[in-house]
Length: 323
Image (cartoon, rainbow, N blue to C red; front, top):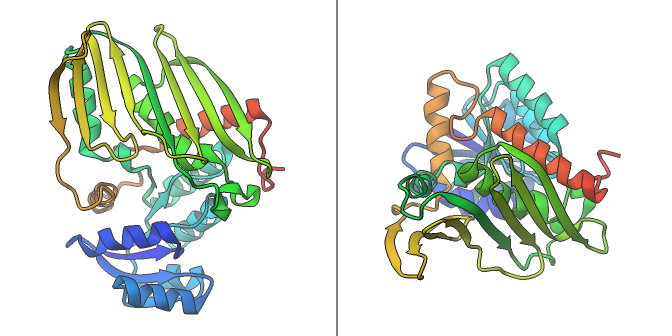
């Protein structure tokens, strides 16, 4: 399948390496608002064509799938452009600025029969099932609580601090913690509490989020842009606990008893980068004529976006486009 990349930033370079290693994909074209940048990216990353506008990429009749790698603030308009040209889309997380934008994109996807999926890679990885299977096995008894954290030193990046680009920790790294909780504890929550420290530019720099479930369980999540965290996810049960190394791309899953003895260790299967799974599923689902992913269906994208809207509302955080 001939793939195009819309946007030529750092994440696009990371994905380009994966695409070149996948026999299922043909690296066809990239687009930037700068022709020079697009052509340089194409040369350096094994793509045949570089376009100086997004419109040229979506108008290329050979392009069969587009990866949207632009900032959060552009996701809505860029996905809309792809759908209008009947181009299937895998869009970088977070899907859109807010649930309202997500609802409109999903409506357009379904009305036009065009595949659109959110590239939240942990939803597609084999590690997701490995974690769920370990919880379901009862090795730690009934799971009662979950903690997860994800922080990086990224406060030197313009897109992270700029409200116009929908910056802040939540949409960039917090989305992983929230997805980790919803993947492994489900969606049936009663309420969400949170606390936040805002940056001088008016976006969230670090936050703590507590999800209270109707069955009495709780998920406690922390995210930030000022320092690297250990990135662990931990599920606590009646007879022990499970540690997931790196919720952003799980590498190792270990179960311990209530005296801290290691009782089971599961290595994650070898991978190109981890990004390949969302595109393998996209290829399969597009071939089936589907307009959504099974691993991250539209309903789940909307559920996560609404939860993040709820959290931002409690902080009084609105992006300029929303105002």
